[in-house]
Length: 161
Image (cartoon, rainbow, N blue to C red; front, side, top):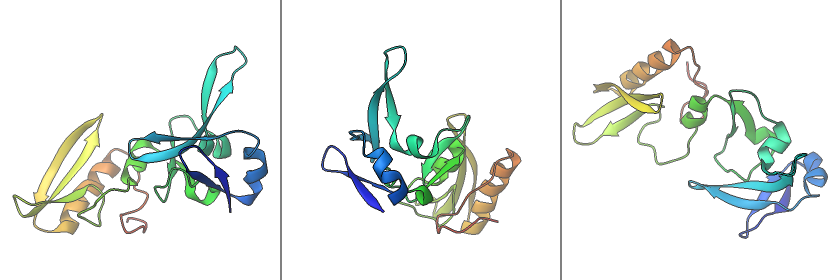
C-alpha cells in the first residue's frame, strides 16, 4: 500500500500496482457530505473539463451501479476496499452512529421499541414497530428481498441470511 498526496493535508491509499500510474496526476481532496474523496480534473476531447474520481479511475464505472468504499473511508482506494453495488446496498454500508446491529432497524426511544423502515424512491416507508430487534430486521429483510435486491452485509460486517 502506498500514499498519494491530496490537497487539504489528506492522502489517498492505493495499491502498490496502481501507485505509479495514478501519481502522474495531481489529485485533490473533495468533501462530499462527511466523507473526503480523491478527484482530479481532466480535459475531454471536446475541451470540456470533467471530474475524475480516483476510485472510478481504478475500478471503472458500471451502468446502474455506484462504487462503494467498504470501510467508509473515501480516500482508501485500495482495490480490496472498492466494489460496485446498487444505490441501496451503498446506503446499507453508510458509516454513522447505529443503534442496531441490523440494517433498516433502529431503536425508537419514545416507544421503547425497535423500528424497521426502508427507503423507496427517496421516501422512507415505515415497516413496523417491534419489541424484538431481530423481528424488526426480518421485516426489513423481507421488504428488500421482495424488491428483488440483496443485502450485502449487516452492520457487524457479516453476510445477512
